Amino acid sequence: MIDLTTQYLGLDLKNPLVASSSPLSKKVDTVKKMEDAGIAAVVMYSLFEEQITHESKALNHFLERGTNSFAEAVTYFPDLGHYNIGPEEYLELIQKIKKSVSIPIIGSLNGISSGGWIQYAQKIEQAGADALELNMYYIPTDSDLTGLEMENTYIDLVKDIKSALHIPLSVKLSPYFSALPNMAQQLVKSGASGLVMFNRFFQPDFDIETLDVLPSLQMSTSADLRLPLRWTALLYNRVKADLAITGGVHTVEDVVKSVMAGANVTMLASELLENGTRRITELNSQLLDWCNAHEYKSIKQMRGSMSQKNVTEPAAFERANYMKALTSFDNKLLI
Image (cartoon, rainbow, N blue to C red; front, side, top):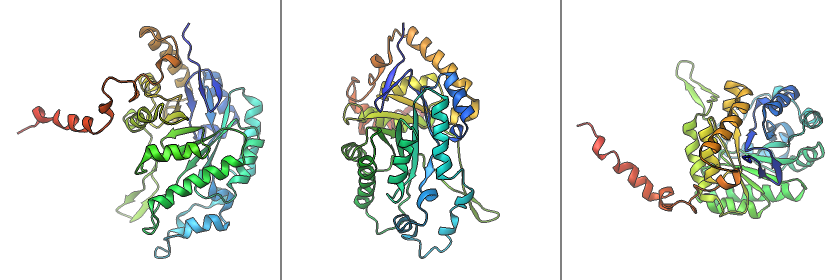
């Protein structure tokens, strides 16, 4: 019998399919449907820092820094009183979901400064969350802010949050750090038990008729898997943390690639939003079929088999592969 079980953040999961942070976790009934369909765990949609501490000095420092010459920047934030639900309702929802399902529930906090996060991280734990995911989303627009200062902000935040928690902590990373392996290592040393690749920085679009800057949300595709796949394969067995891939997981092949790269779990959002919870059942069934056809007995056997440490050509993940990819087009040029 094929064993699809895996571990993530110290949690025993029945398979590597986890629902990533999305609107699907806003309703108890939807979470129950995902459990019935075979999801192994659910990450709650994010409680935003702005909802908790938008009047605190800690947050004001980051919101106002570098915006003096752009007076309209602060007004770009939505009316927080009408965004999703308030912090207390968020905690109540976690309690209701935990009473309704048996799968692990992972809380999610989105922001960058400590502020009221520590208090609400503790409240999320008290509400029954089995773990907490920090989704640190900050665009450093201040030209005086150095990369080292930004990295230290992340590291300090992880230390502050972890020191107040008893449940495991994961960090949803940005792919844009100049030395990602070192940053990953520092976050793990600061208390992160898991790393999630990657945070998607939603890019604004322009309306060239009204001259407005528009919020733009694009669903992921399997093509988006390549970036987290590469870095997961590079980090596997190099940092003492569980690894998760999110963004680009749509097919059973995406799941297999992610696990082979070294991921403990694969996280789905766009695929479920577009095609419904039935995809969870389909993917689990297809994963069993794939393992059977390729003679894999377990997820443990598969995990990390295509990581940089285990492939026959480790340079394929580095600069050599870049040059090889470019030269492959030499005979395809149209003259």
